[in-house]
Length: 151
Image (cartoon, rainbow, N blue to C red; front, side):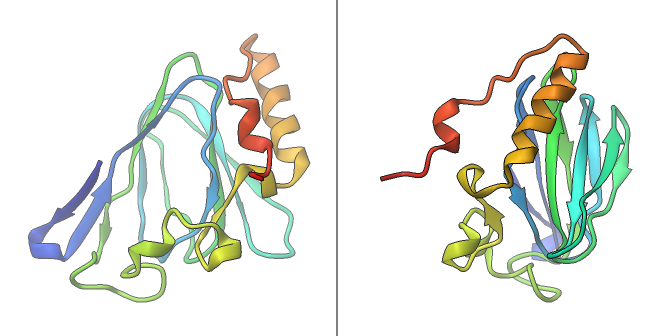
């Protein structure tokens, strides 16, 4: 669910993803304060050429991905995970790179967007996620077809 608030000077969205799943890696402009409404898991953060850093989260956690830094959210808990990332600036009043052009949000980085498709992610990501799920006796619910490049 996408929200434009205060005459377009603020924006937010609500995202929920099921147990045993994770989001595609993505990046965006500054100022998104990610509030974990419910769930347990972790997020990975990195810049091109750097080793990813991990941040564990749970109900009530808050974190702010730096501007245009790649990040990815993983649900390892027993329930669906839900987060809300409000920010200043929106489509009407953009505050810089990564804000105003919503056409890049769900677009493959190879096509000029700000998202890495599952079939293009580093192979260790899927393996690490499945190892984390095994620690809590949970299995992946990711569709194997996500990792296949479309013909």
